[in-house]
Length: 161
Length: 290
View 1 (tube, each protein chain N blue to C red):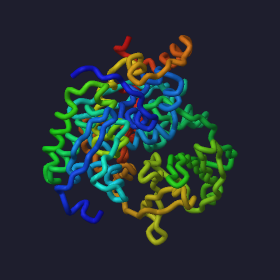
View 2 (view 1 turned 45 degrees about the vertical axis):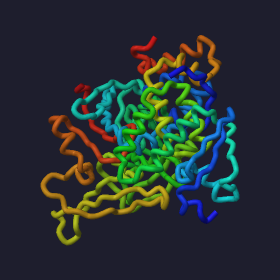
View 3 (view 1 turned 180 degrees about the horizontal axis):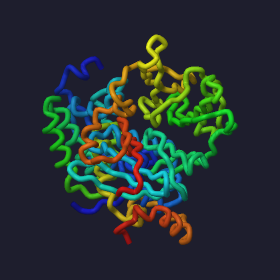
């Protein structure tokens, strides 16, 4: 696979969990450490690479991010930053969760970083009951225990129900 | 955009997200569940949270902690230009306390003049209390505490030096936060009468010491020295000749002092510089001035 970096026009096919195929330029795919490792080993670009954990909608978003970052030169950091915030701006929590999972699976550090930060920024002012639902956490406190933990952290609950 | 269902996130991603949250949110989210409480109060998590906050340039927060040694009053001054936010803190004790240095968001408190010592993380409201080491009063005429951090064993260390009446130097004990145990290190000939509050720099408490020069008894030389917890020894940084009044050790290290001074007016204070996230160290002494 000596040609993997020299030949920028080479393409490969990624297949989402719901069966949709995406034709991707190799230098775009290289944003993903997972794909990079696969290409460095023995995967032929003729193969279709299945991504069983990522649905087509999420994969389209991920590839949009990768394309922007692969095409931009390193001198355009400011432009990339504004792309990143625009990219995540109106995304709901479901999209963000899928994105962070995909970035984690495909090992795209930059995307994982901005998606995790966006989730943190979104939940930081939410009441804990809502956070519990968002993360599917079972409340294993007795009402007494929960009241005690809350009382210990009273200062953090100012303005919260 | 239509609402997508929320998938379950693996533990390491939840961990990553939580370490990006402000302390106040984390304290609220202790109420989510027992596993979340355990995670948020886990020392490893606290450390990675601090690391996260201090490496993110947008999050650098400077705090000064003011603590009264007369009554249990403590407040933090959060410096964020152009405003300063002052908040009263609930102390882990019922009496006054003196701060002997701070490091990575943890303060060393001497509660009620040697009644108890305490390592306290005011942001996370976590503390570890322990008794000072025993040393017969008739053999000593002074003592000093200092806070250090041993990065090899990832352990907070508390140094206690007792100055011997005999003039033979000082007896030094070191407390390991991990083991919750004091260990007698030995007698050090050259560490008598250390001054300063043990300002922490690079994980080690620093003091200064005045020495007369043998050939010119009236001229004093000042040594800055620190305790190195790896070699378990004191090391001299440099000798300087003070001009006028003996300077507080903070002045030797602080480049940010002028900005603090402007808004702190005439308070008596000691601050030393540190790169930090949650709490910047500072050990001002004032009696409920806020």
